[in-house]
Image (cartoon, rainbow, N blue to C red; front, top):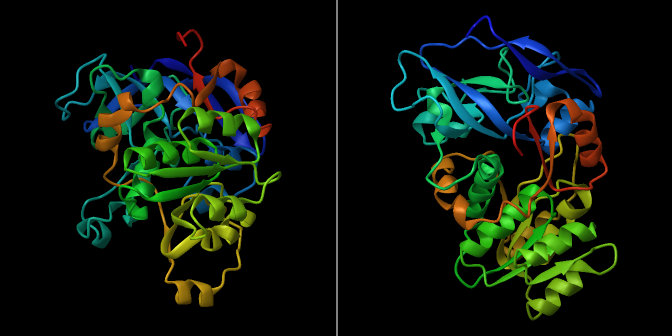
Length: 351
């Protein structure tokens, strides 16, 4: 297997991705070789590809590198120390791994592991290829009935589960979600499953609002046409929402989160922009006892995600599927915000 060739998308620097031959990654004793079925394009990858961020600053390797951290596939081969996996089994994987020994790992905070590793820093590459290699500890079998296409969204849904956990949503809560991209729409669904009685989603793109409405959002707001704060006040009897989840990662939405939230409410920041700085009023946060909470990655939520994937709507989120050879078309669709979740798949793989 080590001498085999595979097709891969290799990022060489700002805006440059080449579809080329690479060696199939070598397999370690405690690793699994996964044959990729679907790999999602994430905003983080777009920032890297388009040169808007230093890859090292967001835990990715400099070019040349094979990217892709949201994916599904099948077991092609398991290392000799790996048990419990069979060739051909459908799987997905957490892109990060931890050492289990450092201070944070022993505090059940493995997402802050000081010795963490992830597919985006691996010299053998990540999921924009026909094959990738992962530690067996990162790999999860798919439950019966979960498709490979749906499983490509396991990672973003696991992000949403962690964010909603931190938001402390209880039955009957009112929730506003700012941003109708993949993460925002995942958060919408998880908030609904967590007991939210009223969900409000805001986004300036009408097609995303239509999807949100189809997913059961009670109120959708285009903030370029309607005053979001007024809409929320009207819907909540002038109180504001119990929970505001910021999933857009832009200055304007981050700045207004506290004002949309009721006294003693919670703001959860899921969207992130490395260079963005936002002014907030500590006085307002103190006097109204608003909790502002960051949400980073998805610790301990992959099993829970997979257990409920069949109850989540993934089809409404997956708007485009492109073969690897048409990656430039896929990137343009993403840049133009014409879709929601765009998947890449090896050429010839049935979509």
